[in-house]
Image 1 (cartoon, rainbow, N blue to C red):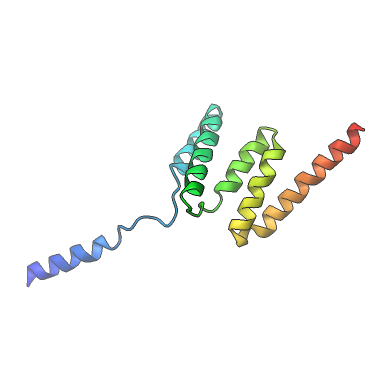
Image 2 (spheres, rainbow, N blue to C red):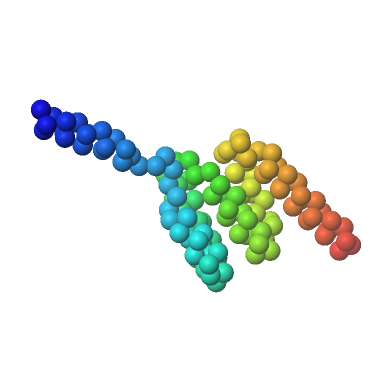
Length: 120
């Protein structure tokens, strides 16, 4: 009888070890490293680009927030033109982010338009 209980417990515990729903590709560790050492932000950007490209090629859904995180890295580097399409992908992939991503896109587009008008 004792063996049956041990087997049942082992079986129950193996159910707890299921893979996550999304691939994060070391995102948390990369983000932590970038916060701790700003010279590693470029490494994080490269890793996110590779992870997203791999997931898109494989037809997998990109984990929530990864498009937005990559867009924000581009925005911080001064490339709003690269951030906007990534924010749009985040908005389209995750309806929960629609309000925030739409506001971000509109703000960036207004800033770009204002810069163009001031340059004339």
